[in-house]
Length: 369
Image: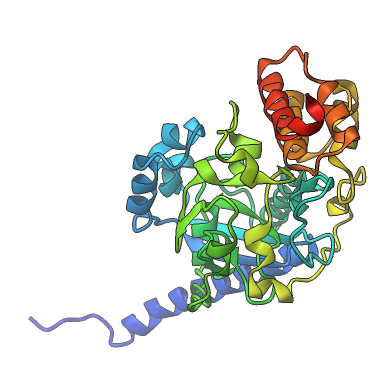
């Protein structure tokens, strides 16, 4: 039987699809523009299918490389399943905000200066990014009407580097951080899980080549190979996430790094192109770019809470702050005032602090006897 369907029907049905696609592309472009207006240096869009990344995540957890970060194992594969974390998720809007607050010329090794990771010298980035991401969602809703979404800033089981790479914001470096040709790695990432079927961006190619400077420079050899990080040896983990005593074998390798570590970023060639952040919230507070170990070790708990109000450092608590500083003092050049500072805490109420103070004093045996 001969069909009576009009010959023009396919063309007619295709037109609405083209209009929808054009509207989606337009919305995507506007979202990126709104993001830049809110202070993000880049915005990209990825799909929510992370099934290809899930086996690598589970293998990393099986190796136990997450250390005391029980929440990593507790959430398991949820990180690779955005639609389970936020039902209805179709796309992820990934946003980049630069934080570099100085010229970052070299590694601040040795001496009596306290080395604090650059991202932690200003205001807590969680608050800054979360506020901007919410404003971006409000702008989208004002334009499109209510939609399903959830905002994340390193605050839930989210594979932010994987998503940002898929969204075209950069590629995963051999140190496992995201790298961008124009910004290096001195930036924060934030995500919006949403139910809007936006067109996705093309991922960036890997531009690390044969370079392995980040692997070679790691003080504790935490980067076991390209794209393989054993968090249990990472100084950022040991000084921030690790709640118990720092393994003695690793203490001398930590040097004067009392909160985080930037070494792998400082030697990365791509960070030559990083620009200073315009965000006032990321500017150095409390002189944390020049403070000495002795000076910070003398802070009372009240001073710690007051001075670091609004700082990401405050979340580790006073006890671990003193633990980290004791290790730094143990690695500092032997001097009367370093030993005197350590002796002032030798009877501290915390067993954790006392243990690290006694270890540090043993490193200065010539004066501590």
